[in-house]
Amino acid sequence: MERIAALTVKELKHIRRDPRSLIMVLFFPMLMLILFAYAITFDIREVPTALFDADRSAESRGLILSLSSSGYFRMIPVGSYRAAEEKLNSGEAWAALIIPAGFARRIDRGETASIQILVDGSDSNTASQVVAYLKGALIRYSGKLLFKKSLREGGLMNGSPISFRPRLWYNPDLKSPNFLIPGLIGLIMMVIGVMLASLSIAREEEDGTLEGIRVSPISSLEFIVGKLLPYILIAIAELVLILIAGITIFDLPFRGSFSLLFLLSLIFFVSILGMGLLISTIARTQQMAWLLSLLLTFLPSLILSGFIFPIRNMPYFVQLITYLLPARYFIVILRGIILKGVGLSQLKMQVVYLVVLGSTFMVASILRFRKKIA
Image 1 (cartoon, rainbow, N blue to C red):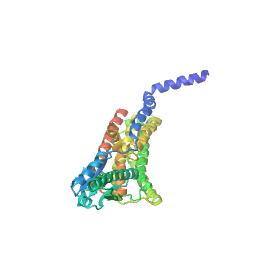
Image 2 (image 1 turned 90 degrees about the vertical axis):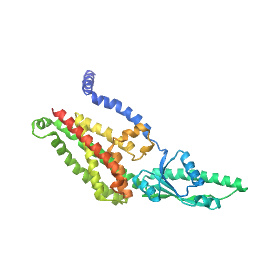
Image 3 (image 1 turned 120 degrees about the horizontal axis):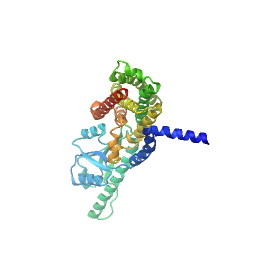
Image 4 (image 1 turned 90 degrees about the horizontal axis):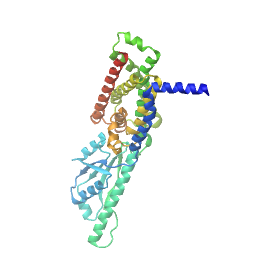
């Protein structure tokens, strides 16, 4: 017992000497519980919906008001069918409602008026819910129109005054692999990339080779870039292998440009490897670097990146945190290029955020490394 007690006291002293690890172990789980409990929700509210009302009648405005007042849809008025398509391509809208000219006239004549609904199927879970909400809202509005007509003309009226058939774009069969694989690519690349880079400087410190670097003529920038390049090559090889597996094994459709995907992937790799190097300059041991990189990448990328749960449905303060995750932007890029076949113009904001994040991580890594070897 005395030996066990002595070892326990020794271990407690060791833990006390490393307060950062103790704080991380004690408070990170609680922080994650609070954060993720707010973020995880399968309900969707205020679905951004591009609206092109070519009829501009009282009936069309009544339909729009009925959908908007349900709380499930947030209308984004556009001036043309083409503009509605562009909103879907850029991801600004998850659905588009097209009300053709003559909508009210057909209803007045007792005919069935058709409307067109386009839904972004690249996120199959959200698309299914959007279609279900739209069906429910349109059935309720059709019931109201029938009731009014019955009162006006006397007697019960049959049939539905509005017909619609939703069209699912980008993933018409709502295949789960088409939705999951691009997200999984982003998640895997994020976790592996950060983890590999996070061990590099911590390993040098543990091996004692950091002292040699301190007295060598190599600058901090040269050291960080030299550390970064091998991992970029590994990440590119990993991306190629994952893409080949997704396309050949899971029949993942690839509708965009390979060259654009690799170009934007390079920007993403720089940002995640910069994040890993920053962790490596903070951690004193490889064990701590590994734990930090896991805590800061795996669950946040899984839950807060938009991979499974729509970011728009999260509380505002959680949405602000998601801006710090490179995976958030890379998953949009992957789904945009692979499933939608969009170009750089639709993804420019994701590129800007990745460049800002990557530059910030790299500068912070260099500054931290200079402080470490000073």
